[in-house]
Length: 115
Image (tube, rainbow, N blue to C red; front, side):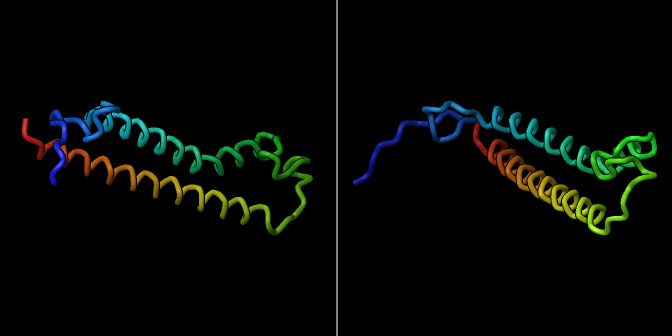
């Protein structure tokens, strides 16, 4: 016994209730990629911002509460920050990769649809 399905317009997902077009989803994914790239740049810029803060007499975002001259020689603060930033950057880059693959898949689907 076959069920009859409602015809789907080209450029839309099979879920007609939502009415999300492939091109709308692609635009949303491109915006998401832009946000993720900006997040990656921000994570990569954190060490530079901390160094600039320390050189300018600041606390280095809390790493050296008394300034650079009174900074205790802690072995773990620098490497811990480096590990956190590296893991954060790897997660953001992995998300960019996943979203890019999804965007490519949607683009191939859009191109292969009959008009």
